[in-house]
Image 1 (cartoon, rainbow, N blue to C red):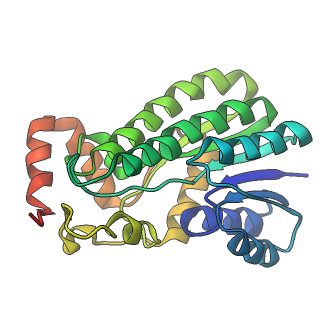
Image 2 (tube, rainbow, N blue to C red; image 1 turned 90 degrees about the vertical axis):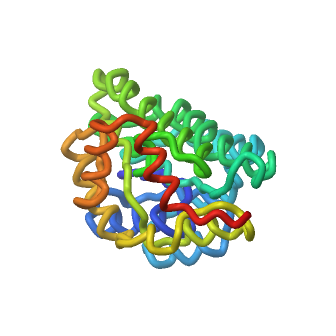
Amino acid sequence: MAVAIITGASSGIGREFARALRASGEANIFWLVARRREKMEELAEELGCPCRIIPADLATSEGVEAFLRALDSEKPQVRYLVNAAGFGVFGGYDELSETEVMRMIDLNVKATVRITHRVAPYMERGGHIIEMGSGSCFTPLPYFNVYAAGKAFILHYSKALRYEMRPRAVSVTCFCPGWVDTGFLGIATCEEGVTAPKPDSYKPLLRADKVVRGALRAAKRGRVMYVTNVYTKLQHLLFKLLPDRLLSRIWMKRLRKEK
């Protein structure tokens, strides 16, 4: 039986990973981890296969511990680990609360590392770990600072972990999409009066199902990083060639400052 553990499974990219893995037959038992039980129950009914539903807020230590207790109790042999849980909020250091900043770090960085660290011993040979990076992880981004820096951490973490998992024949892929048509942007821009990109900066929005299929292909090919679409790949190339100072200036011109 092929087990897939997916965090952030109640919506967006996490949900699309579950659908894609079920449709391809690469997983037939799912561990769905997210805050909203009802959304995961709806997804489990759609998948039509055994699902372990774990309601947990992974931005809290209590939520992570709830998942880890279930993991250590059942000791599943895992074919796919997809860490899709995460969120970002635009705004400067003086526009965001300390609570918002720490929740981004706790979920996007700490929870991802803790879950990966504890699931890794249960990965079956030939399995795949997919970590949620971002197109924002390649350069410093003022007013999206904490989110982008956290995703840069995940990229480097994934690149290094790849070598550690090689003896187990487990691939590690950092999935770095551009702007995807999910609920992410609604959360990222929900605060009034904070600095955020101008609305046109989000275009073109990518289809979640399409980018997820691309990420799964990349994982099966053993690629350490998957960057979506030509636009985001061009950004990645420019980030390699141009100095951070210039890139930050370009980014700042795309922002709408409310104060």
